[in-house]
Image (cartoon, rainbow, N blue to C red):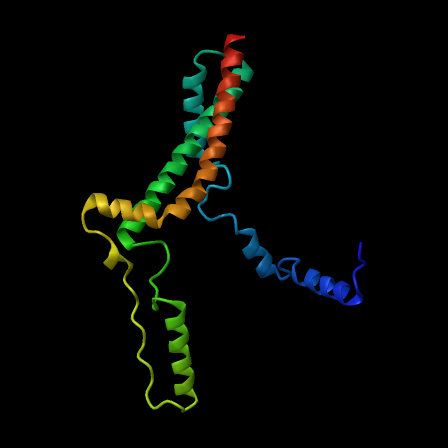
Length: 192
């Protein structure tokens, strides 16, 4: 086994100094919000949500007064309401894509190379090496490529949101697993 050289050790230390995350308060606050993209990372603890949980848990447990049955009924109710919340977020994403053409603001360039060429032309103009200013790029309308008819438009919206919809599946799968496990325990508690 080869021992690392002094140069490798110095490079490792330099890389280690660069990869320790944000150090400023602003950077730490921004990084702390990284997982809060869809609002699905934390449990909903609003008063309305808790009332819905209790109503659904009461319907699931019926007249059974066992604390264990009530506990599992609440877990099932919370997971079921979380699944409904994920479905609403997915529907909202598709609606937004259908209405606006996507999530991101419109682009001004069709490719990175086109943007580079425009920046180079602007640089030449700023330095006086080009006589006229390059034309300001017009935003590309994402709705122009959207079908007009409803089924095709919805399908295109789903295609444009596919990566986001797949990310949301993580939250749905977590809620499915929790709900299924709690249902099994609830049935065991009610029959045993």
